Length: 351
Image (cartoon, rainbow, N blue to C red; front, side, top):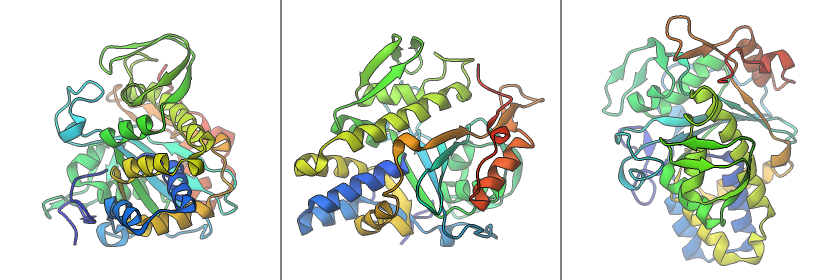
């Protein structure tokens, strides 16, 4: 059974949108290795919600060129409804948007992954999609990327990413703000190195230069801040999001979760309650199998890239894909080949 947004209902019906692909699979693999009782396993399994990409995505989809590689669309939702309303400022309405978006490319050799961040202020061509109420949303040009989720949900975001990149998305993961906070608190915080002081009244973040161990609430502010860095645009924030992702993965990997089943369960419970995946990853068994296939990927070696963008000539507060860099980048991802250095350079840097 699916809801209006194309989600397949599993277990409790709360919305539990995901954030980080490697983190999720690492945690589930740890849990599986530690061993849990059937009741605990069933509870965690039932936490996960999912969508069937093939059923939910309308229209033709790109051909999968590098059949041994895997491409995962990872979203972070900025809904302020329910548990999220008081987090990271809480001054935004309850409508959900994709605050963070990454295409994570896992090469066939499963050695070095690459994460391509898509700025949420990017103007894109949105294909025809089915809205949450079942009606049709017509195709449109120059639509802000993070509005696509609001208009028609995750399936339309997948269609939009496939249209703009030509990359066939194999898997989907999403996490919401409240779940992200609980996850960070469950692992005891995450340490980040701040190069320059950050003072952002909007997100509530106030950090001096140096090393800081952030709790869940501070971590949310860190990945959301934009007014305290660079030119105040979304582009400066992407660097912080990528930095935090690496620190989070390293923290999880450094902890002896096998030696603490109770802590393992707490972390996994927080994660799965916040997870929405595609139907190919909607159980602990499927996640664990996928984690095993990624065992050779070291978070420290993951390359993070921002989609090359340029300031829009009509609206300087928006950006558009920079050419030919964006075309070269997506071509390399599709073909599972080395990404040219020229394809990593963005004319718009965010200061």
